[in-house]
Image (cartoon, rainbow, N blue to C red):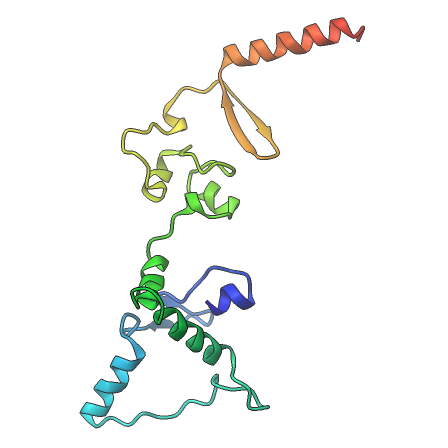
Amino acid sequence: MINMAHQGQTKALPARYTAARGIDVIRPLIYCAEDDIASFATAGGFPILPCNLCGSQPDGTPGQRSQMKLLLAALDGMGDGQARTNMLRALGDVRPTHLLDRELREACGLDRASGQLLRERGRAVAHCDPSEVAIDEVEVKDEIALPMGEIAIDEATIEEIETVIDEDAAGSGL
């Protein structure tokens, strides 16, 4: 949520990743609620060390993480109380077909504009009807690039378009 609110990006640290310095980072408690970890530590007599690195600003105002904790607490207080759980689950169930990132759609084998299944590799992320046929499985003679993305056009349609263009040009004296 911090990245969305302050960076304009949808991203989160995964359970395991390699940091920029080449260090493998494993977050074994990623699916555990902070309150549950604190209760477990208290019950086991483990010390809880205060962290002032990211909790507040030098002027005493709450930092970004503290503000997000307040927002999450408010969201958890509404509805079924599962906002945090649902948001964590959503990070593992991304639907590129329903996002605005056209480059992501294209990289996933989907049409940039519509999210339609174009390449077979997109089937796994498109959550589409299993009977839907990817465009790359259909014989396509040519593709025309438009500002909103690409559409596949068969030879007969291209000939029809060329005929209309020729007729317009002849009628206008070009």
